[in-house]
Length: 389
Ligand SMILES: COc1cccc(CC(=N)NC(=O)c2cccnc2OC2CCNCC2)c1
Image 1 (spheres, protein in one colour):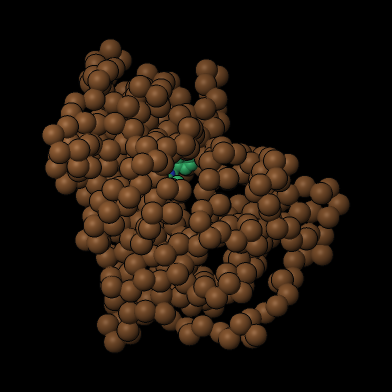
Image 2 (tube, helix red, strand yellow):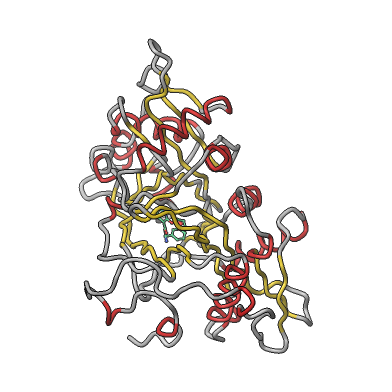
């Protein structure tokens, strides 16, 4: 299939697939900053660029409203991601973030926001190399402006602004295949509220299964099982950073988190991110960690419900507690917090617990991409230690 835009970009091309003579690393060298295009790309005349200050309540509302009505839907258009305002402020303001990487497009006449794309800085390790990357996310074009070829100019503009901050690589995910995935993940769902999931069409009643049998199948205890399992607190940041850094070393690609990053990304934040750890009752050592983020979806066609409360597995570390037991405790606390479903990708060691904990496979795939960085070969999901929001 022809990729008019992506064939012009420094990304692995399908034709280079498996060409082992090509070295791993940047595809293009950095441009001298003086040679980076200084002015924004041209938009169609009726539109203008805006830089979105996520500290501004009003701007945050505009971003939230655009995404709520126009962002990613599932393949059957039954659900649409409904990132909350506090989630967006968290996701877009990590340590070292650049406001200039939060880019909107406004229609000059209506003053309405019609498109959005973002980048946040992230130190990502690829094998032994640490790369300062931009994590690109929230690319959204209003439903009424689709196939006007706005996405390519949005991508070129965020790339230009990332270049201006002397950053030359990026990481992003998509449900579609474009040149060229570094890995393709399967997503899995664990029902927590099967009655609601079946009612809204997210799940179907299994063959030869009654509703009461299904409710019993997914029932979870009220209490977690692991001694010393508790919510992460600010004083745990140094220990969790050590635990996570050591654990992530085993993957080909992972974030290079320091304490500032852990404080931002992993300290519990109501309705945004939950994190727990196991503190050995004997030694008080922190031996395990699990976390999930809150990403509700709007339910597009149900009379009884408008929102699906979904938890997404984030970073998990098991050194003493079996991962399956740790994740079962995560399911128990997610159920207690009234989540309807717990989602996970088959990244890291997740496939070791998915079937045993009664996850079912989702109907889609999530592809991971690197911009301007070639890797030797396609990775297995279990070699990937990076979870994007
Ligand atoms: C249930 O509501 C949905 C609303 C929109 C899309 C999808 C299907 C889908 N595309 N799911 C995922 O991409 C997904 C499934 C499991 C774990 N993480 C995921 O995506 C994350 C990471 C990438 N950015 C979106 C959130 C489901």
